[in-house]
Each structure stands twice: as structure tokens, then as C-alpha cells.
Amino acid sequence: MGSTRRIALVGLMGSGKTTVGEALAQRLGLAYHDNDRELVARFGESAAGLTARYGLDAAHAAEAAVLLDVLAVDTPAVITAAASTIESAACRRALAERAFVVWLRADPQHLAARATAGAGRPWDVDVEAQLRAQVRRRHPLYERVVDLTTDTSDLDPNQTVDALLRRIKRRTTRPLAAVPGH
Image 1 (spheres, rainbow, N blue to C red):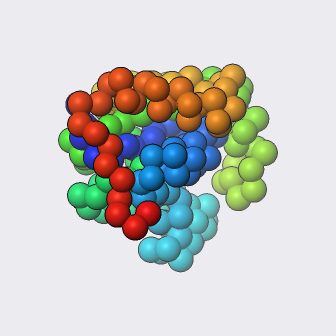
Image 2: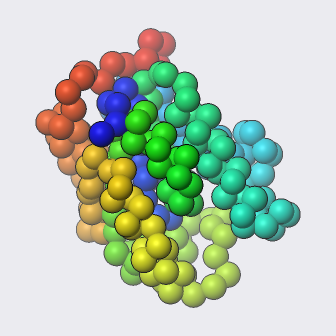
């Protein structure tokens, strides 16, 4: 499917994208781009802030724009995509064409526990029910672009990174070159 010059981590909120992405980038010596951080840098607000101010559709459009911009740069990197970006056809196309896509999966119960434990999560509803709805809507979309899937339900971040490194190195056809200066 996608290029191995960029590894994109996708999955629902709470799947471990940020924690695993940071560690994976460090272990590979690659640049790291977190969709949530890039969103704040570009728009001055988090997804929750954009949602409160402009609505959910505008926040999702901003998340998609950030991901598309990061994927357009031809630099080796680990990229974490906001969960909503998979609903954008343009993002799915860019992910499939420009990255080695790793889907971090977890069951809704684990996702809900993780999502509610973190600060700044935009949940004011039944989190597990919301995540079950997202699973039904988004899992078929992830399946369209994924190169590798890892279930993170019972793995800690270090175990996940170790497993990913073994599996990515077996699956890639080109070496993952480190970014000079990183």
C-alpha cells in the first residue's frame, strides 16, 4: 500500500497513537508529527476548543487539513492521525499513497477507560457508547488503508512499540531512513 518513508498511526481516541508514536519515532530516529499538536500550532486551539467554537464538522475539517499538510511533506517521519481523519476520502487516499499505515486497535471498553483517564478529552457523553458508534462507522474505513494492524487492548506502550518495530521491519520493502539532525 503506502510508502514506508512515513509511518502513520491511525485508530480511535485512546488507542495509544500519541504515546506509541512518540516512542516509535524516537526509537527509529525519525521526526514526529502529532495531529493534535499540529492542530494547536496551526489554529491555536485543540480539537475540543475548535468544536466548542465552530462545531464538530469544522474541527474535523481542520484535523483533516493538518494531516494532509503533514503527509504532503516528503520527509521520513512518524505521524499520528486524529481519529476523525479516516472519515475524509482525501485523507484516506493520502494515507494509502504516502504512508505505511499502522492501525492501533483496541476494544471500546479499553478505549473508553483510556479516553476518560486523559486530560483534555472532549467527552460529555457515554464514552463507551460513543466509541462503539465510531467503531461501526470507522473500522471499515481503517481497513481500506491499513498496512499493519496491532491490537493495543492488552499491551502497554513499550510492548506495542517493540511489536510494531519487529512487524514493520518484516513488512517494509525500503529502509526507514532517519531524518538528519533528529
